Image (cartoon, rainbow, N blue to C red; front, side):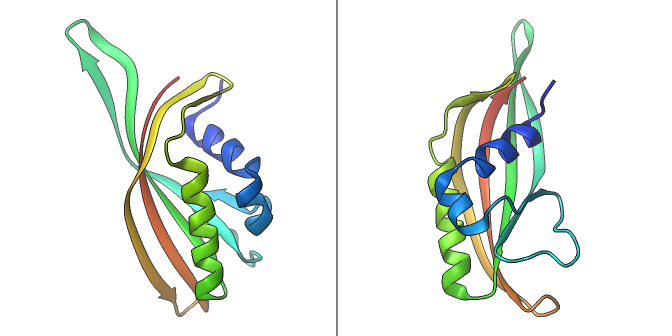
Amino acid sequence: MSTIDDAIYQILTTNSGVVALASNRVYPNVLPQGVTYPAISFQIISETPEYSHEGDSNLNLARVQFDCYATTQTGVRAVADALRSALTGLRTTVDNVRIGSSFLVNTLSNYEDALRVYRMTRDFMMTYSV
């Protein structure tokens, strides 16, 4: 049985725009040590089940944070834009995970001194059922 994390990974690592820039360097939660850039990490920030008068609707609302990393500002913007194109308005089913909606709600740019890379964070709200 797949999870929303599995579905996100599969979506991003098979999207031509994302793959052209970040290859398969998409990681749940944290980047591995010594990673090659550009790369993307993602994590579930919050997840809320949706209920109806009859109980659990099997629908979840998740806020997912994506951190795009690259060695240049132009590079990080390109990766973040490819991510946005891949996820905005997404409605699909991956294995047993049905994503009903996905939309961008926040963007934040930063420079990571310790890593010497640019980071752009994009938060998406996604509804899904498993």
